[in-house]
Image 1: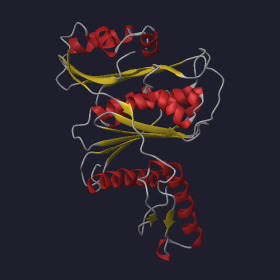
Image 2: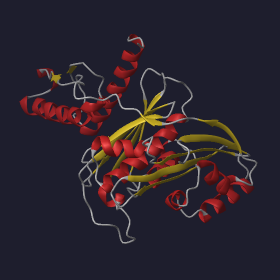
Image 3: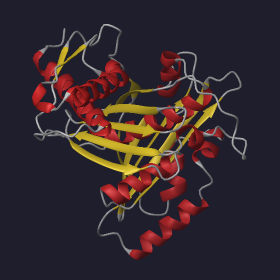
Image 4: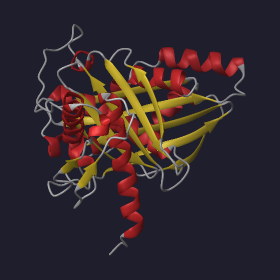
Length: 328
């Protein structure tokens, strides 16, 4: 069984966070296979969700504080409809796809066509790091393959030169064989020699799926990429699919739209968009609550903004409840 943890390693001039979710064994189910079973996803939906779960676990483990939470959301025009993944600093991760039953023919290369399943769309990264309001960054999808989209997000939204690679291998019975990936980020003081050497190494690296197929551990993948750069492993963080969702979670949201917001047409538009945004994220809400949702006066009835606001609300509610309810 492969290692089931992200790794944080430091070399001369760069930081690497790399993780593999491992393969399925008889005793333990890996993160992506657990998600597949819980949501009964099709192969292409499993591949898409698996990539985002892997990235979420690594990005979560890169957070500084124990209470930090990161959410990755993809809204897209493709048949998969969208994906949402949430992870904490301990690399506990959960997620779902809007349409788990999507079926598509293979790509020209004979692979699961994740890019076509997503098509056009936007990637939103929400970080709750203890500030008054969560940080939110958004970029458009450049390929729909998720790894390239995250690479672009880091460059465009956070201005951090980054290389992201992700992969999911499926068995013939549509179960998950292995899944994993890596994230490499350059530090501001990286020397040109280090950058050139790393670019060459990444160009020579075949793919994450190739490495997983040949049973490379996270340490082995890091060795292939950074073995000659004075690499040191500083931390290993166990990861797991941790889902506290249930059908008993928020069962309803009371939508209150006053006349000050606008006429009947405007008020009904608000209600429809709030209801749809809530429906898509109901399972991400804390358990046992009913919500009252009321738009602020002067707010613009934009679905994307409503969707992000409800996602931020879910994060804040879950953290506040965790503080108030003691562990048994």
